[in-house]
Length: 173
Image (cartoon, rainbow, N blue to C red):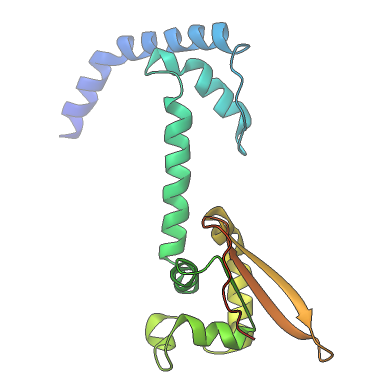
C-alpha cells in the first residue's frame, strides 16, 4: 500500500507544485486587498491564507473554516472538563448566577453525584478548577467574576451568560 501511495503521489507532484505556485502568485496579487475584521494569534498565516484562498475555494471560506475549527476545539475542551460542562448546563437556564463556591457545588449537582460526575468536592477545589476553566468558558460566552461581600469578606462568584439576555433571576448567597 505504501509504495502504491508514494508512486501515485510522485506522479502528481508537478500538478501539486503548479497549484501551489499559482496560489502563491494569486496571494501576492491579493495580499494588499485583504482587509480582515480581526486576526487571531497566527495573523500572518491568516492573511496569506485569505489572500491565496481563491486559488482553491471561494473568498471567505478560509475564515469560516478557521472559525468552525476554533469552535470545535472549545467544544472539545469543555467536553473534557466536567466542571465546565456542569456550568454550561447551569447557565443554559440562567443569564446570571451569583453565589459562593459552596453554593455552586450545590447548584451544579445533587449531593453524592459530584464524584460520579468527576466534579470537585470542596469549595477550594471548585475555585481552583474554575480558574483553569475561565478562558474556555469565556469563549462560549460565559464570564466569571469574583468579588468579596459583607464584613467577613466572603468570596462570591458571579457567572454571566452573555448568550442570553439578562433577566431577573433570584441570586444564590
